[in-house]
Length: 239
Image 1 (cartoon, rainbow, N blue to C red):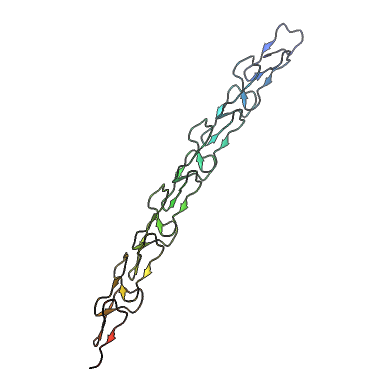
Image 2: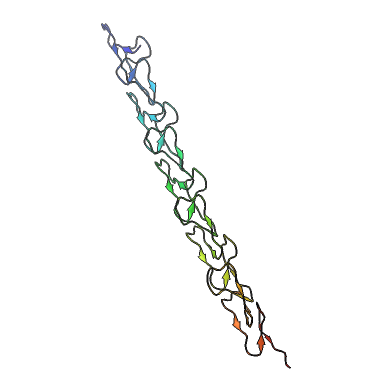
């Protein structure tokens, strides 16, 4: 075994060349190592399977080739390397497994050699993501590689997904809670004269606001009065 003679009347047998083998005695020819195997010695009686992380795509190999970055071979004897699935990567050659992207990162394509950080306004809460999720309504993401978005502070809102920042409530409105998608109008009898308020202020004595969403209170006209937080002015009674 390991030798062959292709002619009759030979004085001796020849050793199998590199990349070839003869497993039986009395062989007339050596056979090339099949795909996924190699022989790096002469006179080989068998071929060796390619180790994990390597491959041999052709026959008659004297060595195996490491998988390129972005690929892997998880079993010995591979003829080809497999591409890393979406959401994972391989940054070194000769990998036998791919690594899931960390939370806050993603790999949209197969055969990735690295993961990309989520852009601002998006997040990835779990490992192995192949896409990032837009920040929900009422939240924002001002940095890259976020694993979660932040709720809008009181006095602000975010009415679209993927917001980079929250907007202050307009005059005449307020947001009393964190994480709101919209601001509420000031109730009658109250007002908000500046933006970004968490609460509206009651109209002071002698003023009133008869509609929602007021940015200021109206002065009572002559002959009328109003206590604090009044909806409308009241006439003085005749004497």
